[in-house]
Image (cartoon, rainbow, N blue to C red; front, side, top):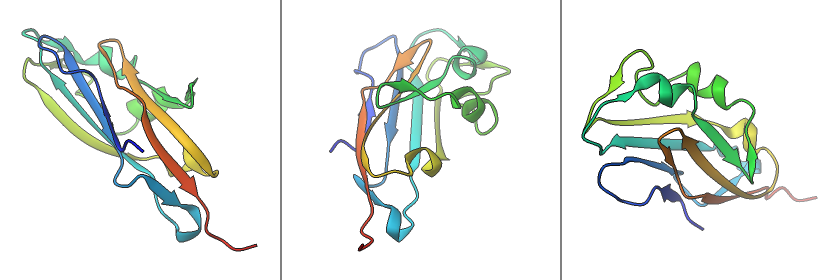
Length: 131
């Protein structure tokens, strides 16, 4: 399972990465699904902050997460939504998203926006409770 997913490395692009701390989470043990987001502006020009916040989306198992806008506009934003993301700018932040992964299964998660899209991040949710 891939616990880190990123955009291809290329110059003059916005690069994004998402990761989790482990490839498998156990509901019965109370594991929390924390996704770490990293973004860097490898372009030679500033990128408007609102273009990150207003267009940032999470896709889970091929479906757009309806709460994406709420998540990225009501917590730590990928970049300051009221300013420019400068050339060479970097940001790293984490969201606890356990409530979106509360059923057993294999999850494929990607993060996309106007200027970037990560490769899918794959992890598994299990429950070791005995029936």
